[in-house]
Image (cartoon, rainbow, N blue to C red; front, side):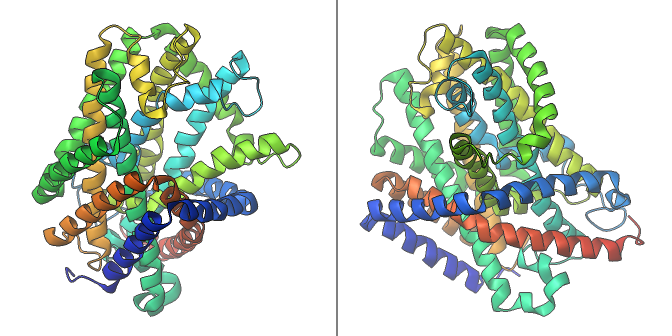
Length: 493
């Protein structure tokens, strides 16, 4: 089980080749990858909207159906992790660094720069800003993660299959998934994981650099970001060496602790009543407009349609592209849960936390913008720190923010090395440390190279483009899973 497979060599070669292409011809690589992504968004936007909404409906069906009683494991098997550790780990892997990076930047941008239909800076733009941020980071996003994680966990722990995406399709395609077709499926999943994490490491290094630059006048430069990547690489290597039950678990719990401190401080020191009122009001409008927003493509309004393609379709493709990494990791830590417990936990708890987070940070950022501080004019990686500057104890909050970004950075990289190790050693539940170290070094090196050449955007385009074939794989996984569930329904839970 721990032997390195051909998937390791294919994906490592493919990723290094694309990174080299980004170094040699960065402008051409970005132009070509951007054109591909634009074509897919324009011609398959309808497909992304339909498939993601289908995932939401499927998750809701499982919660209320008799299948919800089925356990992700053998009869009587207990969960491996407590609720707190489980939720902390899935949240850290799934959204963590994104919430910190965009917690202020996204709502402020939708309010001032990119409202879909309202005039920038108006009351309508403000209401849309928070509601659409909820939409992009809420139930739909977590349904994507929940579907792939649930299918993998079910086959891993209920049917004792390897922890591979291809193994979940054997119910449909049989032994063909053990040959070339199965390898192709796993290559797509591993490639999406590598590129997604490398892109996130680049974002994380950029925001940490932005934070220390904002606070201490340290320049924003590649060399500072390289030092940050090197430090974080050493730290997540140490965490990787200690294993899943120690390193990732403890860091994820630390993430949640720091996140709660930062959230409560922003809630108390910011416009508290305005935040609470906005959260309550936006929850109502979010659920009220959820059905129409789920299918909105605006075919008769070019401007609104372009906004949907640039934002909603992009986000759905982005979450789908990230889902192999997040899904496999969530599956690995979810042994012993029932399907109902799993779906409710993955779908509801992180969504509510995201809504609370964006309410506190987004409204505080918008209030600072309205009071004369140009938050929208700051680089995205500095928006959080610009908002903190307007609050009491802003320096302390900013330092805590940098610490939180750093720990999210480490857990994302650590989780990814574990997932990549699993996927390239035939689904081993405890991949060799040497394999995890290899992937960890490769991820950091790719992130550093792309920051140096300015190729981060090109790799992001490639990642989102890879979401289209993987979304078809996800559909097949759902069909395979449902077929297996029907055969399993009479077995003990």
